[in-house]
Length: 583
Image (cartoon, rainbow, N blue to C red):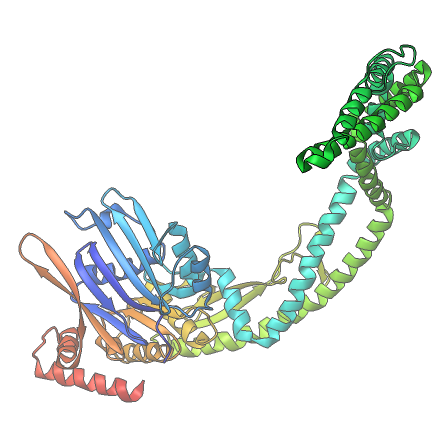
């Protein structure tokens, strides 16, 4: 038996249900009751947990809000668990708590794993958790895309192998097509870009800038522009330190420091502290001598050449033209030059690149043509086997003359260049091949096969979905199925067969069925009854699990409308025994 996905659901203040706990079976759970309102609320509750539309009318009269909570068991590697984790939800002991609150004003809130989430996340999770089949709200396999996915999974390796190769080739083809479109449709813009890059590179090459040259020239211009002031300052500073040869009697700093050093040196032996100061004065004297010598050399070497200054300013102006266009400094200009040279080489190689891409595109188209035929052949074979199996199931579900088929069609491409060449036609193709897959139903001989959503009544549609799910059991990753009155319009032997097939489906998935037929409910592993009470002013409904004698009484009521009828009780016990031995 599979582990159930939905273990428990609590409903508060929703419609006629005031407060109810719905504990579901690991296999097959049947929900019955005297009236449809309470049973509908059970289905509606699950719909809210799955992200269905919220309506203020669902809130019980007099209540501020309605709340539905679900406890879901999910393996840690299940897609739903991974998606919930990405949203910040916490999964404790393999259980995910999901809740939906609808206020009397119509506002709706959703929580997953203790985290407030958008309602849309519930809908995302439901795609991997539950498939719903109801009288008015069919989901899942009614969508052609889901029908194709179902057929592909049913086909197994025969489709999955070529489909994997198709996906790889198709994605590469899309990349090549985008690049070719860019090169060919933007040819004028690319030519203009190449001209602009070529002009810039030529301008930079003519100037021959060197890294850091702008900084060096700026410093040189500053020095040349103030050469006289710099020379005067250096001469004055040198005289103050070393004295003026033209004034032998003048006092300079070096002489004064030397005199102070000699005075301390004469008595240094008498006090270590004074000796230390004498050493420091000696260092100062040496340093002042070095500075004075450098100042003399600086003043002698300073060139106040107006011609050199003019040349420096001219070079700086040329470099400024480059930094104004291509970068904030010469280093940035040189980086732009390197990148632009690479881009220009790419643009100038367009013709060669177009040839390479075109050749690769043609190779991929040939590969896809072969894979497309392989996919069509494998799907055609699987479609016949799948349809025959579903048709056989329908013959036991009170639809003996119904026939299910798959329509596999190809659509002509908008133009020859955009399609694959198959059987002399240009065929449209997409991520999954060239086939459009649709499940058709002919409910009786002579009837035209139509899409199942249009070719069947509500009860017939639910039975078709049941037959499909039974045939498909084990291949569909959705672990829980909800059928709302799948037995509508059937009775007797057909009802027994509906129950038997639901029990068979429950061996590989969790199945929840809202039913009014005792023949179906008898096959359930767990039997829940929605009971309604009326105190004259307010109607209440609750959900009770039926076991042992209580279950026999409920089946008796469903059979004859009389819970204590001995004949009905005998029939109920017979149904239960037949279900236990014949499921």
